[in-house]
Image (tube, helix red, strand yellow):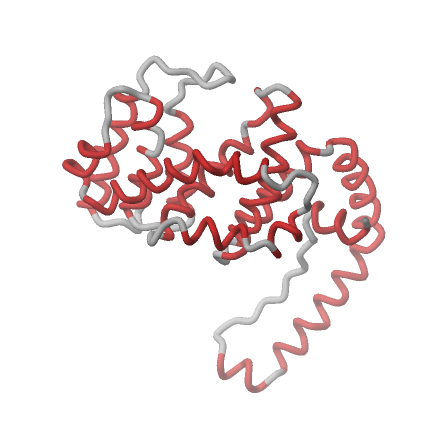
Length: 252
């Protein structure tokens, strides 16, 4: 978190201490100390270069709901009203996310998008950082979903595709959106994920020379372009593979 000031990093450190104290003795389903989860959430937020209040909220997002040591008032007293607002909002979103997805059984992500479910979530709060913390929370939970029972994994994965991946897209967090979709695809339909991975690997090996040649040709055109040369210090063309879930949806 070198992008934060010394004072901001000190506040994050204080929040880390509070999280360790609040979650002392708690375990995740995997058997790991529970505090590894909020620390990982804060790390995801720091990777997105979020401000220190958002990182602190990531560290404390489960402290009120899951422990007896911390209250919204104590969070505000120590870290200010903005952090309280984010933590309180994230707690509220967590309580309704499951019930929202259960109200639209059988519908796909496109149907939910058309129903403006994402807008409903954003309208729940005047603080968009609430949603950003919730997305980081969901991303880490998706990364560690293997310790849950299969039926619960499928439910959470479907909820992720229905609500949280579209929300990430809505906020322009495409890296988060792509990883959420990839993980949800893997857990919800592992057989299709494995089949897509095998097909994708075979296709990539066959098409790699063509893609590299096209990238080199585009790079040469960019290097020769006078406008780009004057407007940009560097133009670099890099091929990018589409995510498995995107390939699967197009193929299906």
